[in-house]
Image (cartoon, rainbow, N blue to C red; front, side):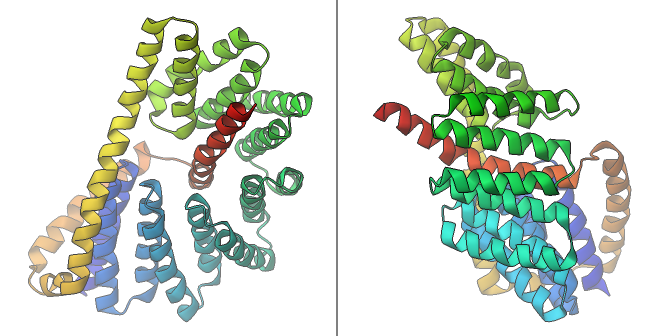
Length: 360
């Protein structure tokens, strides 16, 4: 029917905006897709739309809204017995709880996801969960437990990209216990893995962590490592490790009286943070609009007024667009999901490291 066609069209539009990193527009389209799926009684389509809406909220750092979207998707998955989806969405929701610093809830949801993946014998996703549990242990300052969880994860995953992140996280846990030799060993292992995989996001984090470690006893060498991130930041854009790298360089050059260099990196920091701040503002406005739309149920009224001819035109355009994007925007979903989680951990971890330095 027309509602199902609109659902598919808005899912496609949401996908396009998601890949373009326009989270606000993606959220709007996914919400509309969920509404049309509900009108047609397509519960699987509704769950899928809420799942993707949660991912877009997550990317926009709107973690409470992401959690709400995931909860809606999970409720529907339970009703239609979509067990594998329930596990994957539970993992995503646990990551959102983690970023929102709601660690007990994150642990509960992740344990539920782990149980599902164990029943399905999905070892790769079991590895994801153990990494997330390690992150919770790290934030709880139980560093030996974090290392244990990371070690379990390393035995389960096959991806060199994931193994690289595990090495970086394990090194960070050892660094937090002031066990510099072990930390450096894991960072160097990560660099060896980087020779076999191209992952700018991982390399930025690795340079930032290892550079910070070297800054403690060899500041000039640490700065050289941090400077390797500059070109990477230009190509990748905002991430918390990128921001921490620039803050560290600003602080170093200010301490050494090199204010021209300090201002240069301060300007670059402002440059990468500005689009992120703008997106957050757009998201806040979108949240208010969605609340009004849900209260007034405007979408259901509008769906009955749209002409089928317009629908056919829209679907034709979308079909061509999605085919083109499928070739040009090919990107590993597995890598993408894990990258999301890793971005989660950086902000709070770096805060702890800075606080620790201040105490020392």
